[in-house]
Length: 320
Length: 320
Image (cartoon, rainbow over all chains, first blue to last red; front, top):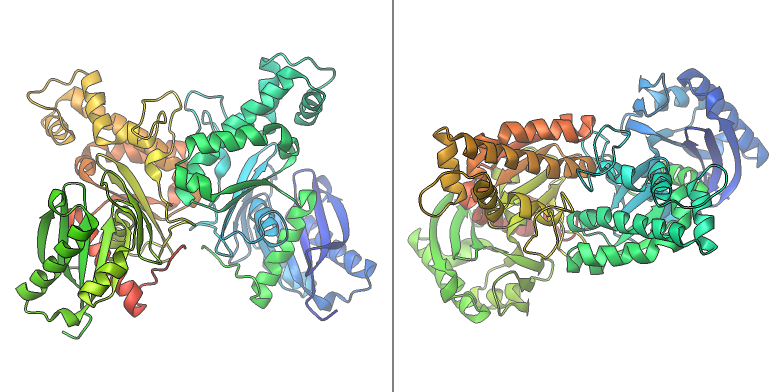
């Protein structure tokens, strides 16, 4: 094991913060979880990550100086080049926080930050279902619907770090109202709440609180109404992806996130809709596949960010 | 004037083929037009371009050997790297034609080809309304609606050369039927035929055949129904561009093509819709402007393609 073989990846989520020590094969050797509620403010977050880094290094007998660095994916808008968090979605207290420099001063190791979905996409590109793709679109389906783009081996961030906002493409201007205020966004059609709403509208019979997981369980056990809801999800998602395919002509789209656990229930309809609604040439050029890294995608991608910035092995630059 | 200061740009359109001798300041020193009907087949096209190149060089006293090369924009799908036309839209006889090598054998000069809207976008990026943009989206509004992308100084083509197909993004699945067979594409909402259809539906009073030009004339003279149609165009176009802005977070969008001659009649509504429907950060980051190169954009962009490939001055590569 040579120096720089290890990096720590951090995935800042709304409920918890996952931290993992990752090796150059993309394997998580050791991990721990912090409660977001307890360290949600910037100062507490910095202290929490400091402790987590020491703990992870200690658990594997690694001197912190042998870490290539720490990568952090945050749910919001960042200036990746300067390591600044502009704002976080649903987490107060984060406005123009120079997170990378603060953590660097504390850890004495390189620190890099980026948007969480960007890093999930980077992780899948490097070690997951996106391997070998030249133009990769990553899509996460959960409470929110997000996207990331890796073009020719570089994260594409746009001019303000806001690129890849797939969740708020409008599929239907007369469609359901979205949390963002608009009508008919992709998120309002296939996000977790939308899936539950569709199930209610379809009168899916169920006990207890209806969730996408339970709806998937019902569909797997043969409930026809539940199966039809998942086919509707595949159809709506296919329509959204058709536009992305026409615009970017990618060779791979990786679909992840909690709702994507129902993949076998909607994949066929998704693929059929893409072939019906996208232009023939780009539709034939793309493979739409399920994410492989699951819950660990974010921390693995955050580690990839570190290596890309420190070794040049991965070309991970600002704005391309 | 040193060698390689000149290139010939060719813009292969459905009605005519424009050829121009372009200097390194992006000025067209001399130009001529061929009728598409007369040279639409590959062999006739090669012969026609050969004659045009000799004529243009002769008209300015330039030895053909002093040309950097010939760039050609075609209305269809190309393999730019290998100089092959896969197919043309609405021009029969073009299936897998190795156009670049055939012309090269005839002219003894470097020849490069690309999609016509890509080259219009490249021209505007280099010498027109896209100058200085880091991430540029080019949109042409005419009979068809097309798009091109220049990312960090490189044409972005996607994995099969089909990227930038903005015209067939679906704005509204219940919208008007598009020539491509789908419903509610951007082209079916704001292409020339759609604008005329909206004018009819709005009972715009007119003499003779209604065209976008005439509708613009009526609106300029204060016809309220005609003005309302152009505002509707701005609104629909803004909705389509909002999705592109969310996805790519560009700093510039250049709108050209015949229908865009009515720019002052729809620009305000367009900008307002973008601010209402795109996410705030990317909406603030983008400037949406009118194209500057007009009819010459295609031949100028085709010349830029030549310089990018022969001198490395412009990074114009395959598939990025």
